[in-house]
Length: 203
Image (tube, rainbow, N blue to C red; front, side):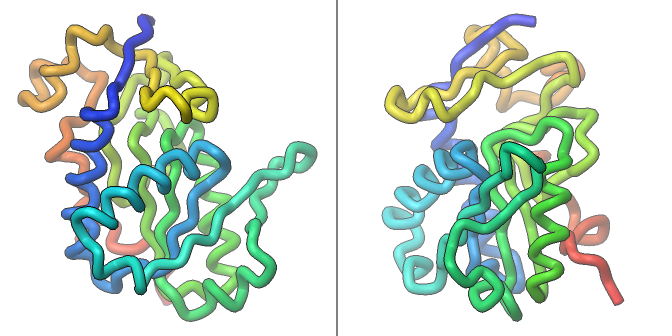
């Protein structure tokens, strides 16, 4: 396992691709819920791109952040009245990385309780053995690889990852056979609607 760095340009490319795909989602998620400081890093970058590329979204989107209890490890919302904000709305869950998937699963369970009508999720990185696969993601890494805590990287503008060395970055946009088994290419990172249109249970 080696450590490599994802610069701001690479992160921006992934997020612009995500926003383009999100623009086609129906119903459009008007509640964006970043999970912990990792998700806050991501949503900050996304909102800057929204301002530049999708200015009409600004009046439609509300941010309802999610935290995790240090003692119980349960998710909880960080606004005064999350039930009022989420009930009857479509929710987008955001995190920089998904490891085991337990936090995302807990977040979905909570928004179901609060009456969300639809939900989708995005993560820049997903581990291949995660118990939760988001609706959209940037790339996938092997279960033995790891991610450096993004909270510590907020001021540097650089995300640090462990999977491939930095010289391999150009191959991320090439066919999957060049990537071995570690990554799902950018353009393939969309879960077909026939498989998973919504994260909420039907019926």
